[in-house]
Image (cartoon, rainbow, N blue to C red; front, top):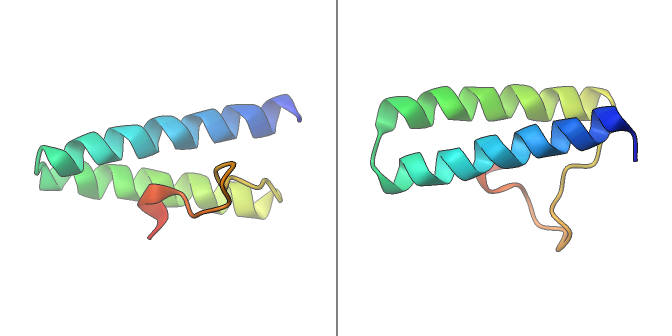
Length: 64
């Protein structure tokens, strides 16, 4: 696994975790900002052919 792919996966996981916390806290503004950030990271991953699905094969939580 390349360093780029590993860093991208780590950033996506961090944003996804933070997004879940903000959803639980009902912080709509933070959810909107983090959703945009996550979508951008997922676009970068797709553009570079980086598979970001979790080991179980399901979607990234914030990608729904």
